[in-house]
Length: 87
Image (cartoon, helix red, strand yellow):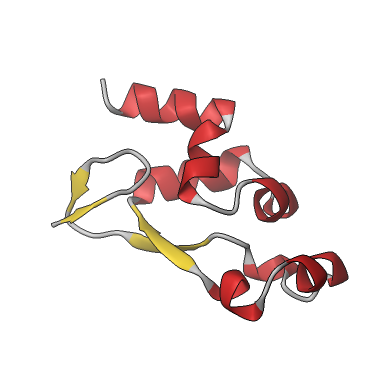
């Protein structure tokens, strides 16, 4: 069992989430503002949270503004989903 750092639930497994999506790694803005190590950083999220993050936030927006678990938790739709999930 593993804990999801976003919703804090204990789940059988987590999926790897790139905090800065791979689709934007070649973009000059990202290369200029993040190190290679930062762009390769991943976090294990439960399947539910991982799916909803990609549903609510575009990859470019995610990379620019929501590149940590703490920042993801501040996104209004993600925060609302996490509250709903924990009911």
